[in-house]
Length: 146
Image (cartoon, rainbow, N blue to C red; front, top):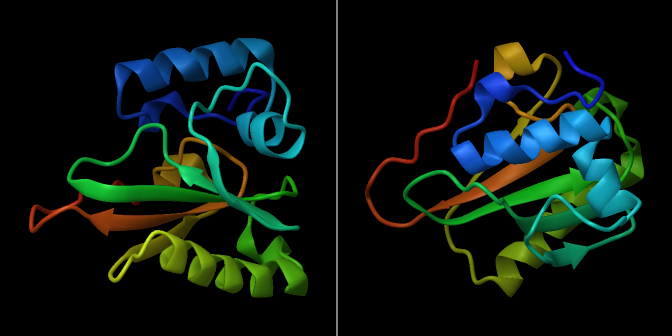
């Protein structure tokens, strides 16, 4: 694993791979850089939808196929596992999900969180984050888990 904690093997698109290579060269965590430190230029092009004391929510830059929404929830502390979360972060995550679903009028969704080894989970970034996915239609949304 590189210093940035990115796994190119799990990238889904050419543009994503190119962006990840730049991040690796820069040697930073993209989520810390863009959402915590809020440094420019940012690697993530989409605006923040909801921000709380503990979480930032934005649309995924490289959404899964057949999705109406593919949101990422990034914890504002660089941790790798959900068991590292503090009580306030856990409670705020559930409140943030409610806020986002209400704001975007989401009536159905899938929520997932990957942790630990990117090689075993399909994640691209080693910084705890979760995804809320809303299917566009009846086409299946395929993601890699493991």
